[in-house]
Amino acid sequence: MKQIIQKVFKRPKAYKENYNYPFCAGCGHGVVLRLIAEVLEELGVYENTIATASVGCSINLDKFYNLDIVGADHGRAPCVATGVKRAKPDKIVFTYQGDGDAATIGFNELIHTALRGENITTICVNNTNFGMTGGQASATTILGQVTATTKYGRNPKVSGYPARISEMIANCEGAIYVARVAIFSPQSIIKAKAAIKKAFEYQIKGLGFSFVEVIAACPTGWKLKPVEALKYIKDEVTKVHKLGVFKDLAESMA
Figure 1 (cartoon, rainbow, N blue to C red):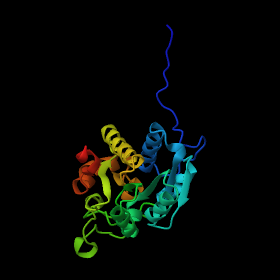
Figure 2: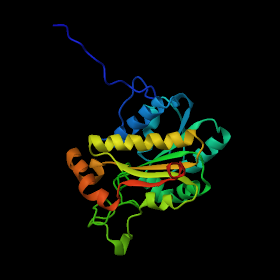
Figure 3: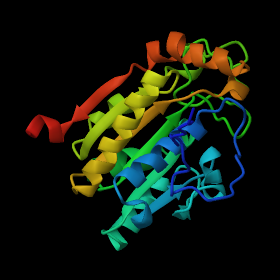
Figure 4: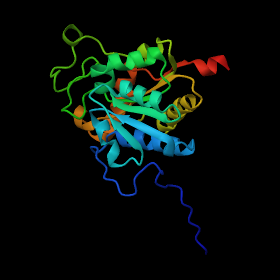
């Protein structure tokens, strides 16, 4: 009997041929970066794309992405990306940031980029802690969550309440598309890719600032096994950081 083999999995063109995976086991960054690579290839823009990486796990982008990449100080990726886009408006420009970077240290940069309606895309991977520097609490850490700086769980009387960054960005008039997705199951990954693709499509059309927040696992920072971390996203994190599209001006105007 003749055996038919069909190839269903291939390396995205935005990936280097020989790259070393730099993230911890079970980390969500690998999935998100794969989705971005697939989207850029499907849209036919990966050769015309410039990524902006800040301090944090995003600093590893150059290890495996076959893209032009600009580095930024901690939290400053949106303003660096703004300069890149204004200097080269024909390029597709995106920032790749964690919640410690985008929502904590650099939230001022992020919200003013949204207010100005810069025609760039920000992908924020929210794992509710500073994953790279030791698992400290970030602005998005949920109440009761144990981190390196909230040993007994986040207490609102001491550390305040979690920042719901998508809802806050959606209130900025310059933001055209704002969504929060998660990656804990095949179905959720498919939805995450669709949101990322729409964000880049809107940039290609020149519509304004797009923001996609991706809830992802940090087993090392959360002190959980990878499978437990996925369950924690579904059962705990998304109860606070609720999934959904918070703004889609292009669709509402269609």
